[in-house]
Length: 262
Ligand SMILES: [Zn+2]
Image 1 (cartoon, protein in one colour):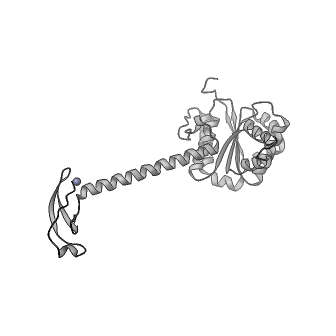
Image 2: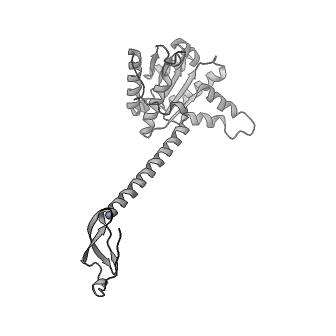
Image 3: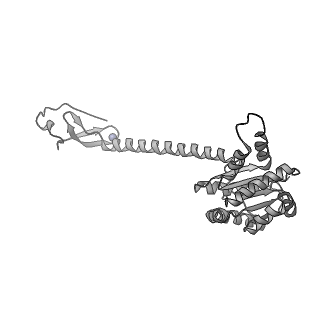
C-alpha cells in the first residue's frame, strides 16, 4: 500500500515541499496521487491514512469510555449501593398502579429538583412493605444526582450501628466522630431498613445524631422503612420526625403488594 521510490531529483528534493506528484496504487483503495514530501519520502494512500486516524480515534474513545466506566464503578462502590441495585434507574422502575406512579413521580421530581432540596435540606420517608420498590426508587434518585456530580451514599441502620460500634474497639483507626462525619458529608444519604429490628436506645441516639447533623448542614436524607408512619415517628422520636416533616419532607407510601410475592 505504501510505496516509496528513490528518485533522482537532487535539487528539488532539498526544497521543503515539492509539488511533484506521481500516480500510485493502493491494494485496498486503488489509484491515488502521491506527493513528494522530502527527498525519497512520498505521501501514502490518503484513505488508508484516514482509516488509521479513525482507528486511533476509536481506540482512544473506547479507552476513555472504559476509564469513565471504571471511575463510575468506583463511585458506586464508594456510595455503598448494593450490587444488585446498581442499574436500578428511575427509568427502569415499572409503575403500573396509581400508587407506584405517584411514588415514581415523587422520586423523579425529587431527583430533578435536588439542588433546590440542598438549599432547604428537604428529606423524604419511603414507607411500605418489603418488595414494593422503595430501594429501587431511592437508588434511582442517587444514580441520577451522582450523574450530575452530586455525592450520594447508601447505608442501612444496622451497618451504621456496626460501623460506630467498631470504633469502640481498642486500636480502632476510626473514631465515632469520623463515622458521623462520613455519614454527614454526602449530599444525599439513604438509610435503609429503619426499624427492621426493635430499635435500641443506641440506634435511636445514633439516628438522632446523624439526622441532626445533616439537618443543620441542610443535607437531605432519604429514609426507607417497613414501618407505618406512627411507628417511624416512635422510632425516630417526635422532635426529629416533626422537623423532617416541617421542612417539607414528604411521606411517600408504598402501600401495594410486594412484587417479590413475599
Ligand atoms: Zn489505501
